[in-house]
Length: 251
Image (cartoon, rainbow, N blue to C red; front, side, top):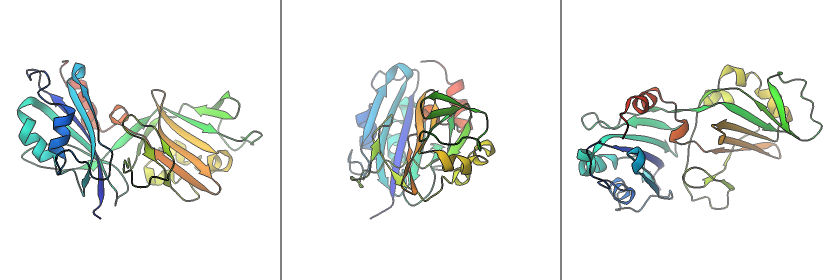
């Protein structure tokens, strides 16, 4: 079996494009090599015409090569096509804006968070943690810590027995980690990596939040941790993506 690429596409329409010139069904058909049949990833799409955008999710072999076909078919209606993707043989998501002349030139994609929530068994000693944590309800604490991280947003649905959590697109299956949270490998801010050992010692679950939405969830199972990556375009913090969204004319 080939490496599975979980592909997320945001296609932005030109201001003069006819209504429904690009649809989620048509875009999925162009992006996938089997005319709409996604490879090992649940297909998903949303026609966000008020925002002048069509979003889709699909799976491909190795990499998101179908973006070339999508641009050839719909490029005259499009202002830009942005792609985030995860290779099942790698560690972290990549992102690129498709440029017909340059092809696919990806870079690592970072995601933002603005709060961290921790669930702990009753009676846990918090003396090793900083005073930035505050209780919000019994056994649940929060800290106003913000920053960005790297993530592997795998949307493959082959491991059907794994536990799932909902995401803005399709349910996400758990990745089983080791005995540590290993925040350094995800490029977490130093303010978090310094307290990782203390959090591991008292937490049964950790959630990263963006605008109140959980974007990254850890849960402890015996001595090991499970991880769900629930990121989407809303918390994508790639500088070029943010600049495009800020400067794009209103539809």
